[in-house]
Image (cartoon, rainbow, N blue to C red; front, side, top):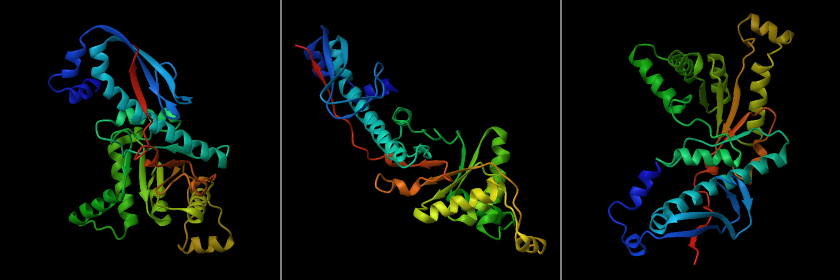
Length: 293
């Protein structure tokens, strides 16, 4: 990966490198922004700028050849780690045991591994690394499943039925070793996903009181088991309500999380908060490399 980055920056000939030659020199890597820096000695350590972060020794031509690639990588990854750490501190300020903070798969093509690693250093869960890590059924999967069923004369009567078909197919394909997550736009969709056997339900773009109440009802209905009163028992006998089986599942919340509204997402019923805000559009940390002279 690093070789490809270097080749991108120097596809043919390094004219500046030709000028300086191969003499062995020493250079200092300077961190110039307040941040959490990723490094082989002080990985994840906070520093006050300007900080001498590392010393690089070797042929000066090769040092300068890799300078920009190294600085760009450090700047990007340190920015992600810093943003992640900042948001995690805010979560912990609202609860001693906040939901797990996770990133997303909305990473830079070709740069996913460093970005996921930066999230990890910042204290977040990197979430799934690729499509093979876990089966995530989003709205497009559900709609596509519905269309496929229609072509086989098995027309789902509702989105809920399409969710059941999608989860069943995903479970058959992945077997016991691959978890299945379903993106849900409503409480009704989440209920169907849990009934179908989803390991994780994502409440997408829920916020505020609606989010907390929905998460609470789902956990009480399935995780704790639903205790029916006399009135509900009569309804159950008539088929109007259903006594739910106890099920193990996680609730993930995604969409709209910011440093300003983070408190709305913290509650005992939510297990996981996933957000691209910790790795998309984050401010880079400024580093420079200076030759000692």
